[in-house]
Image 1 (cartoon, rainbow, N blue to C red):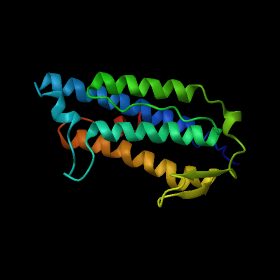
Image 2: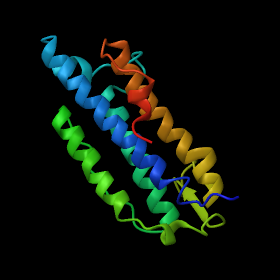
Image 3: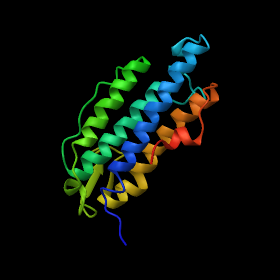
Length: 169
């Protein structure tokens, strides 16, 4: 049995973004319940040289839309990354979920061999096939930022666990 490129990408991205949305709702409720300034969580970092929670979510979203758009060979939506509140992050997640909902399996399936170039014309330019981009670059990057967002919140006392991280599947 084989798995399609679509099945290995869009549904996985959607599941994890839904879970991230739910985790952020729990974080906001935690801040309210414990009388914590929401910015203490939104601006939290695991270490000073790492991005804060807001940026981790923005980058996860960037990878979700980038993976799906590149595999579908359509234009990447541009978002401004101006989010500063939990409500802003929820709106961002909703926007990318709607984008993912617009991508059909036939736009991605069969694109395992297409060439995907990241950061073209720069010293960081990388070339991939569609399949290698998804499996060795896109998904690992996406999961890194989703996991880091989760870890930031857990580290700061939000009561979440593996089931929250995984979401509904």
